[in-house]
Length: 159
Image 1: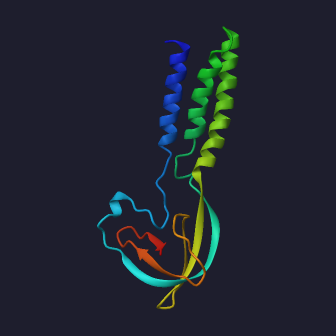
Image 2: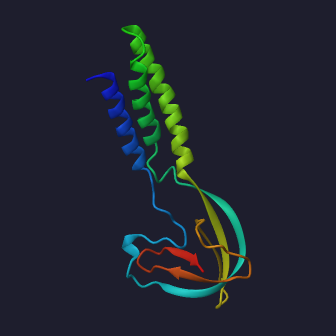
Image 3: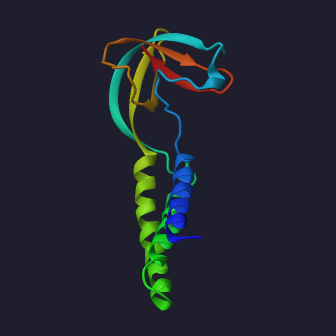
């Protein structure tokens, strides 16, 4: 197999691995296919406070995929440098550099901007819900809907 073909195969494999890390959005206005046509309880509430948060999904994505894919791509790319011992050294250096780079990419891709929305329901309950920032623009004092999925226990805030 030629070097070009090996690099292309490694790049394609890495892309597929990293694409598998992608997770659907968790904003208040986004629904998964499994949530369609399922009844949710709705409570009206008033926004009491808002706080921007960082959602770290690195644990959810399966740790190590970015560094593993990076190591493969880096190792293949490094193996094209030199011959004999030079190729071995290039492979090792390429794999280490690729693993480090892949790890940084994985962490960056796993972090999302989120919103902690503290609400007071009409029956007097106060609680906070963290969800990805989405299209909904919330403001303190705004009337919102709190939707709960009894099947999964998931809760979201929506306008």
